[in-house]
Length: 442
Image 1 (cartoon, rainbow, N blue to C red):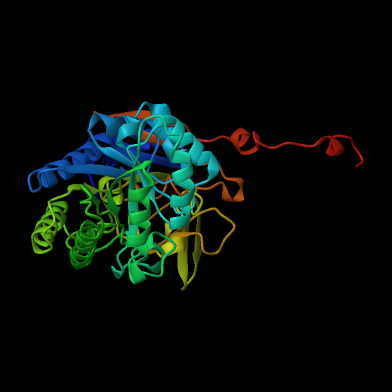
Image 2 (cartoon, one colour):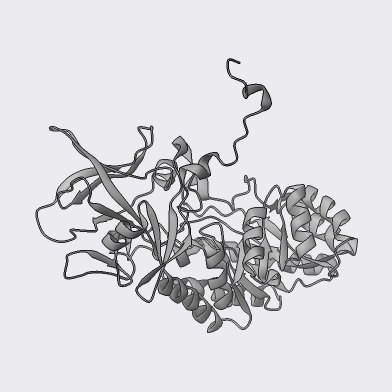
């Protein structure tokens, strides 16, 4: 089992001391469930291991992994920064009372509305992704009422972390960032330094996600520090900050628990490589930023479903259908992501059988777990899929007009609703029937 789970005297699964059967009966299914204590523990671990190894460091949670107003409050209480990638994520942070001076704003194609929202309400660091964005921002930054606009530049360091192609972001051929080739990134940084309206704080990179080895991080750090040195040499300006993004992978299956580096070993390679390369290239130690997301939230989250149809095709396969699927977890169909599950109301006992867990969407590819072994499953059982704390709620959709699930934090053994589940009414509340369709017969 992943996270803080146990089996009680009723043979029911408990998440952080809360019986999943009671959760399903009281709050309905599907339901995203987070262990709040584990979320906080993971945040504190990141702060601890980095602060023990580096003089000045800020931990910024990658909001794209999972974000809601309550999560913003938790992040604020734990002293983390927040990495946002859209106006919606920024607006969520703003509305929650999160300090805007601790927000990073990313994006390769920020809209005029997003520009207006962020420039009006302030930002900790604006991450510039291209020269065209810089040109537009120079004009807008002249009107920024809080002094010079603090900015980072996103650099593509040309590192392949050998993860899934869809979540590799640091190669030269990428929609993100400024390439170092032919001096492109240097020329853009020089333009920003000379414009007079921007406070160029540093540079940023993110090489990918769900990375299972530390070597690519070390290679990226050497490239980034070497570029800091080049900027200092060519402009006489030593940029004081370096943001290395995130990307540390996590296990989704019990069998993978030893395959991924620990947060401590990740901090060791990051801090050690920054120090080593700063000495090598004669650059002062920058203030360091890292942006974990999945490795903070994923194992703290699970999804609870209710079993519906159970169908066996003799000699071929047994299908167990739940009341959710790719609408609340599109990762299996997008990335061939692997998950594990438990029957929450009957965890132990009985011989196991091989089944496929599928969703209710009208797609053959709506498969949550292709092959798994479970105790015999029947209609009405409570099924728990583990490790859904990252990129499940964030990527959920209303495909097939299915309402999105609610989100619960388990705090001291009790459930607290932090995102209400959608209703069928929510699916149509934005619809408009124009006048020409109002009259019958037309």
